[in-house]
Image 1 (cartoon, rainbow, N blue to C red):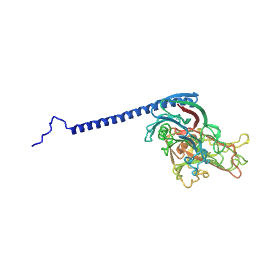
Image 2: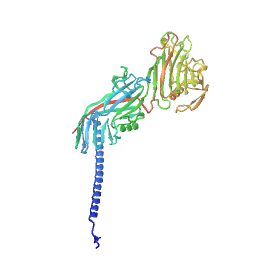
Image 3: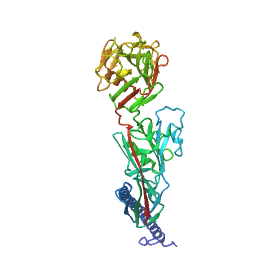
Image 4: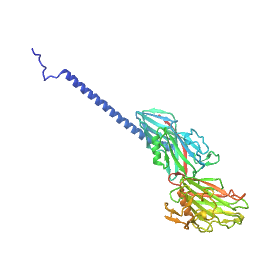
Length: 498
């Protein structure tokens, strides 16, 4: 007897169970996915609100830190995350390498310093913690630090939300450092109160502090070396991006949470000693003929004064060499005697050279020794447009060897020189016997040298020498990647959360 088959119009109990299982699974998945999406949306919304609240906090804190208000109160909202104040996170250091203009290959690298000590050539001008006000939710942070607002993702990447109080314009760096004090924490509906602790305490310029020599004050214009702003922070990448966008100096990668923005200073400006053995630095010249002044006044200190006098200033960069040489040959009466002035330049380490000569036989209107009130004085204005150099081989016209690059016999004089490449140049090729104004020749070759350290040498007969009152003056315009003036202050505020 055949078993009866089930009615095809009726549902199988097993099928019903399977169908219900699939439906419930899909529903649970939809609810789970939807819940994740809602939570992600809610989290993004809260982070966005925290950014807005922290930007408002930034504006109010700046009023207090920079002296416009004694205190401010800010509502930070009611996000689900946590707010906290930390006074020992982040660090800023202001470092001046080669502040005294002395090259020092063996000097300790500033990066190895962990306090305010120095090695005589490099010094840390400032070294303090920044502190921070931090909002954290789901491993994302929004923080106020150093006068700016930063956001850090769970992966550790950070970006700028609101700019810090750091301004670099026209060779002037203004950096009012904002430091946070406090240790509160709060959640829910949070209110922050910002109170002033200290405003505009001078870091640089600061006449009450000195460099390591104990006498050189921290004054503008800044001369010699490199000034570096170093930030150690959990938001290092954000600081690095900001420095790259706002400065023209070298900005390092973040290394261990530390980024450094290095900006060269303008070098020696104004008066300098021209006694043998001294040196100056020429750094950060603007493009073109930026040299505005190069005056020399020599004063003898003995009866023989300028007998067989020789003096030079010389510098080199890579294969480039320059020397400006002034000499008085022989003894005898010096008052009214002309001197020989030579500009020497080589761009291949002396193998070939160019020389420009101004004396009684070459060029026009040579410099002369004068004797006002019985004192022998030699004034040499190397930017004098009324005098002209002659392009000629100085080695063929009785010049003694140069004091620094004394290799006339080793090199070969180039019979031509191209004076072009800068806006003020005549754009011509000079040949032996051609003449050009003194200022043009000196400005052109200084521009060709870029940055350099210049050594000063002196030769006299017997006990003769230069009086200590002998002085030079150099002034030149700085380019877009130099710091001439530093205005750095410390501003402290205390933050209380409730």
